[in-house]
Image (cartoon, rainbow, N blue to C red; front, side, top):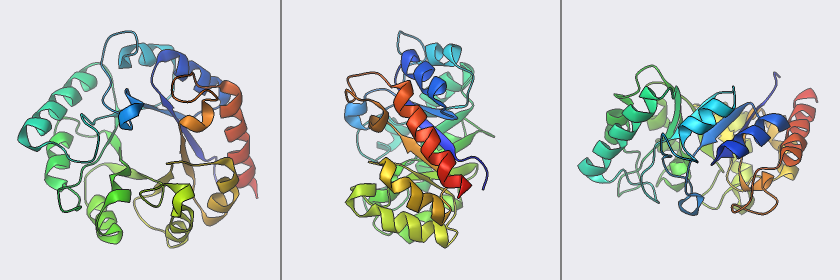
Length: 235
């Protein structure tokens, strides 16, 4: 197994620098974690531009304008498209997005409309999957979307610790596509089982912030994850 991907949430440049120092391969760039992560500004003290200039690793930028998993209708999609254009013009090359309709099905129409603004860019389908009415149907729908190369998932709406671990293990063993990026309440003690099942991408946020979301990323905590992932891959 090749080196697993370690993706860390960054809300500011200082987070980005600490995460990379600890061994992160990739960052998810967001703002407002009280809403589980929204689209960051391009400029400003905590904007994408500052993070872009601070580190030299891939950055997956969130395209999400509101809490929850609805795109927000025509107005919401227009706002998302405009944000995608601004970020792309500022150098963003990878993204995170994903929406459901009111029936809990993948809102492929809205996703495709946003993707029109970022052709050729790799992207992750957001944890909306964990809130879908039919998980298997949702996975199949996501797999038909252009450019997607992973699904951020905790295995359940409550995350890895809420019963999602077994789901992630079963999907990995079955070779579910797109690949799972394990995240959502992920803890270090889940890593060996996930790695043994074949999960090779991991996403952490609060787990590497000793003071919670109000505090910074700890390079030491990120390094502990890096070592755990590399040890799991070596088994």
